[in-house]
Image (tube, helix red, strand yellow):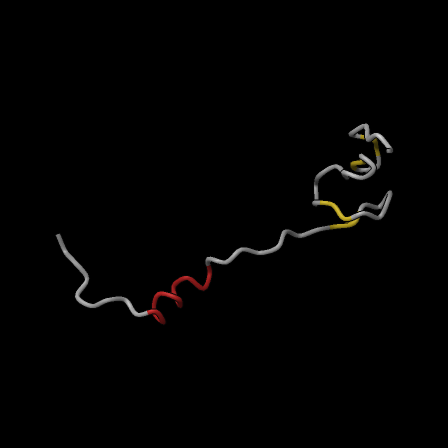
Amino acid sequence: MPLPKRRTSKSKRDKRRTHQKTEAPGLSTCPQCGETKMPHHACAACGDYKGRTAIDVDDE
């Protein structure tokens, strides 16, 4: 079974992991109410999706 000859340095390890970061999700604004929402999802505040009501939202 082959083993590494030298220990991987912190610098080499971290350079390899530079692309393994998380990004914030892209958000868009609802044209109906102006709240932020996920793209291609119904708005949680007003329930609209593509100009029509997709979810019945209770106003409390």
